[in-house]
Each structure stands twice: as C-alpha cells, then as structure tokens.
Image (cartoon, rainbow, N blue to C red; front, side):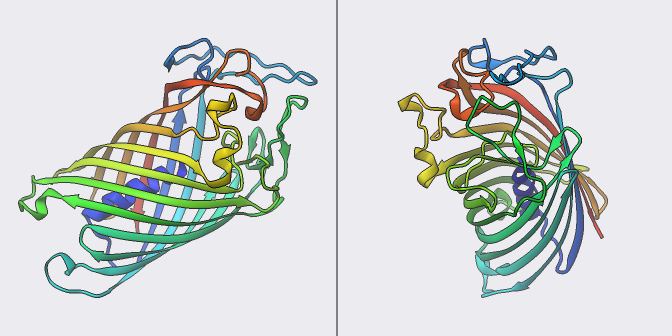
Length: 335
C-alpha cells in the first residue's frame, strides 16, 4: 500500500516535471474501512463495525473486523535532481537521468530509499533502487515481528529493532499523453503502465518464515514479487488538475509462489491481489498538492472453518472476494 501513492505521484510527475534540485515533503494519511475478511460472505465483504471476537491460546483464533477500522500515517522527505542524458530531437528532446533520496518516518518504522530513473525516450522510463528500514512497537501498533505458522500462540513474536528490512527493485514504465499528438490544454488523456520486480527480505527471518512490517498483515516472506500499476487519467488546467482510474496488482514470483498454492488446498501463495480505485489531484499554487484515493481491493477468501485461524499459513483458500479497502490523502509540499 505504501508504494501505491509513490507510483501515483510519479505518474503525476510525468505530467508536470519537477525542476532539478527539488526538496519536498509528503504526508500520507489513510483510513481503512472494517469488514469480516470474507467470513460468511460471498464475493463481497460488506462494511461492518461489529467484529467477530477472537479467542486466546492455546486454541488461538483471530478477531475478524474491528469497531473503528484502521489507520495509517507516514511522512517522507525527498530530494531529487536530474540532468540531461542522450538528448535529441522530437521524442528524445526531454531525455534525462534523475536521482532521488528519501527518508520515510511512521509511528512504528523508519526507511531510507535511493533510486535512479532513466528516460531514454518520451514514452519510456526505467527505474532501479534500494531501501533499508527497521521498526519498533508503539502501543498496539506493531512495526516489526516474526509471524509463526502456529495457532498455539495468541500474538506474533515482536522483534523491535530486531534487524533490517531491505529491498531492491527494477521497473519499467510506459507513458502516453494524447496532447503529444493533439496539442491543447484540454487534450491531456494520459495512460501509464508500470511493471516492477522487487526482492524484499528481513534479516531477522529465515527463508520460509513469515514476518510483519509496519503493522501490515504479517504475510511477508524473504522473496520476490511482481507489481503492476495501470493508470488512465485526464489532466485539466484547473485547480482539480487530474482525475483518473488506477488498477494495481501484486503477486509472489519465484520460490515463495510455490509455498502453498491454491490448487493444492493451501493458503494461496500463488494468488494475485488486485486493487482498483479512483484518484483525484488538487493543486494549490505551485508548491502544494493533495492527492485523494478511494480504493477497493481483492483478497483471499478462506473457508469459514479456517478463516479465524490466527496464522494465515494454517488457513485454506476458497475463493477471491472484494471489499472497500481505504480512503487515502497524500499531501505534497515542495520547498
């Protein structure tokens, strides 16, 4: 989820390129709407603020849903700079190399990220980068933990500052703006498609051992994933300067994909998650903007007999289901 806003902001950046030597701050706030994770539902999990209570050890069952939902907050400070590279005429007039360094802070984590982007021609961007981070516990919020594949414990094995979560990735983006063929302020119909392969690992976990980071669902493994981001949008010369539709997917590739596949009665290690939603960008002068996202998500629906198991690795996949995931606000200020 954290990378969603980053990819959207990058797409919007393609519409209005930032100047060299930019320092910016981004604040993300999101509200997650509660549901019962597909329990006793078919196809779509309705919104509910009445949870199904869990049960403590030795036969631990997880609580489904909540009385208030969920929340996320993160602030990021970024510095970026660019330089011309293999500049030519026409589609190669804007060729450049751009570097960016980012420091991210949340109530339970800290991350540093560095990346380099190459634009060899107007409609293609290649990106590579790496990141390091760690987490801690703050009240009920868990930043870093191991997630044992057992229902005999009532909580995850918290490991505050217990290691480093590191990641490396490579990505390619195709971008198209109708105004390049039909110039005009009202002709900016934009298409963006990004494919990304990322390897992420936690130094405190063994291969095949699940772990939690930044209060997520604890379904992480040391391994590689493929992420797809697809945007169709319209840019306007107004305060509300961009509206669009975004589809995202992610799935395990490599060894993790075969841990517990759907066809073998497992928890669904080969499942592809989809997230669909709208995005609206509001520009406040030259230095401030607000991006609003409203998103629905597809996830694994487990059998009613196993969906309350504390460990996801002991559940049995049954079918996909959709739910209203979140409303997110991403505010950016350029210094």
